[in-house]
Image 1 (cartoon, one colour):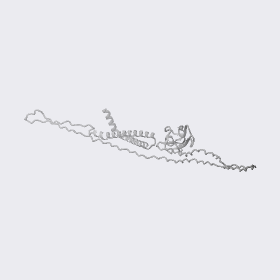
Image 2 (tube, one colour):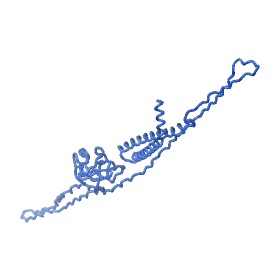
Image 3 (cartoon, helix red, strand yellow):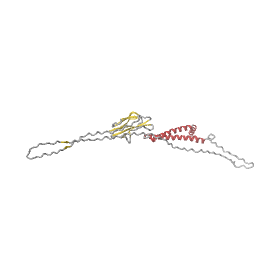
Image 4 (cartoon, helix red, strand yellow):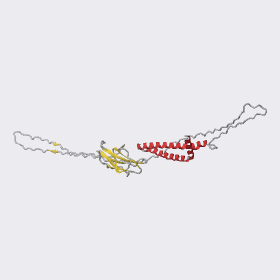
Length: 320
């Protein structure tokens, strides 16, 4: 273990600049990766992309912390640990041997019982300077909001015309009866006739047939975002195959949604998002059976790699 530590310290002392360059380049790369992941996580409207961005942000921060630890360890070994452990004689502290000074007895004097030795020991202790304290600075990524597609106004349906029934009444009078006088013994008086009118029979008129409310116009302005089948204003039922084009620059995924009415307040996704572009082909299958009668809106949205998307394609169909 001691040999391994010596080899590691020698390797760091030999190539410190390589450790500095590799750790700095790695920290810069993962800093920008974490910044991009944080922008997608905060401003992307789709939950799946936000979850992927959160995982990418977490991994980038972990790797950034490891690279920073490598940089700090290299700096500590190269600038603090190795310089303080070296000495003027090649890293070895030499202690001088103790000096013994014998004492000679005076002439004519009695010798002492035991010689006395004087020992002088000089010890030098070098204390290493205090370790530097690493301070962390909070990285605040700057995020630029993306543009929001403009909504297209659709005309409101007009009410069907009111029907007016016309009744023609014709008065018909019966003819007045005439009589001839007859000779009788007693005078008779002519009968009195009262004219009565026969009520006219109204002529029924055929009520107007109910008309289907007009379907709002379709809104598909982007060439790579098109719905071709079913067509706009078509009557559909059962399982409906949706055909069209979903292919834009830097394509990431597309999704097909449906909502009730000409201008729905909310949409529901048909199936799941699809991550393969389609050119005039099958997009999704919509189960229209069991839905309420009336106008329904189908919407195709195509998202690019940056999380932005052009105006979606909306068409209206009718369920009888």
